[in-house]
Amino acid sequence: MLKLIIDKISRIIRNKKQLEEKLNVKISNRGKEVYLEGSADDEYIAQKVIEALDFGFPFSAAMQIKENDFIFERLNIKDYTKRHDLERIRARIIGTNGKTLKTLSSLTEGFLELKDNEIGIISEPEFLEVLQQSIISIIQGSKTTNVYSYLEKHRPKPIEDLGLKGEK
Image (tube, rainbow, N blue to C red):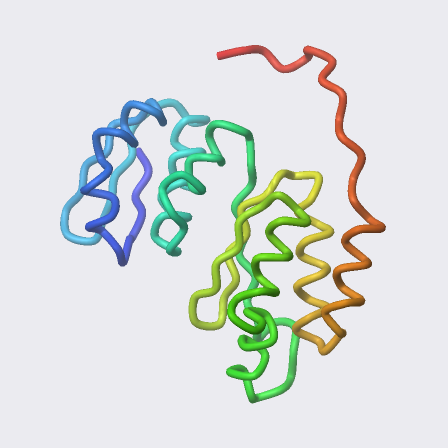
């Protein structure tokens, strides 16, 4: 049994039945504590999906973790800069009318959310490292056009499925 502390508990309760069906776990809660019960693999995936929902991702984006083997990661802006004007850094990441976030998402086929001083990333494992590096570059002051060209040059090649992973 796995225990999580969730701030946005209403999102979990609202989608509880769907989450239980799709994630193959039993979900129960007491206050802000959410308990997951199932196999170890299912509990781990459910933990990542619920953390993504708590971070603020839409339900469809969070379910990509289970359905398409995407990975959920968090980056803390404070870990990559010594500057104290974090509002300006967050504004650079968002871009004018959210254009930078949308462009990063479309170039990497992933999902990005900004919450306080953290950036949540849901992405394919192949794109994750490149996407993290590009966000760190923006935090450290690189021009967004340079970051976009970096992403285009370092696009990972599609992985050919050899049929080694068993179907569930």
